[in-house]
Length: 173
Image (tube, rainbow, N blue to C red; front, side, top):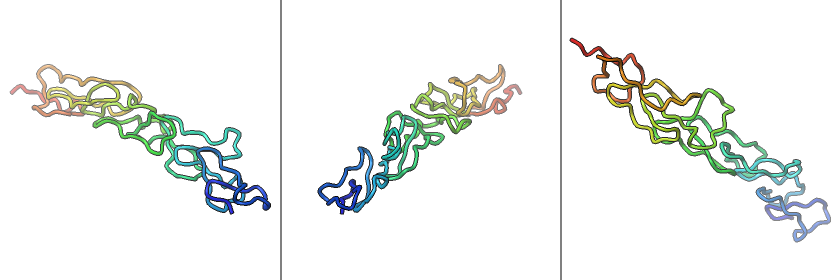
């Protein structure tokens, strides 16, 4: 029988003449066909596929080992900037990736936008809006970096991280 990571193509082969699975794939011990070679975590494809075994591109991952599964997009709030990934990284605190397009590939932290009540550059750091300011934007397609000022004569009563202009109260008695 063949060791793990190898297979035999005909019954006359002995364990010392087994064929080796392609790079970045594996098979269980005693495999008897090249189809038993499945892509490792971070990779997809099959031995007989025209492109063979390929690495997941940035923004995608595959956690399952020895699996024919395809790579998946990083979930909302996560990104991955490297290839052959088995998981994705969390966006910086108080930021998220777009949720409006499930096909959007989150390939780097610049796709992490500061959430409502926070401002800063894409990819963070995100700081809370100061008292007297607000920001209603949550992760999406536009890039709104700064908080808005309440209208003249209105404030947020020293509350920070406000998410709506509705919290701006008239301070005049």
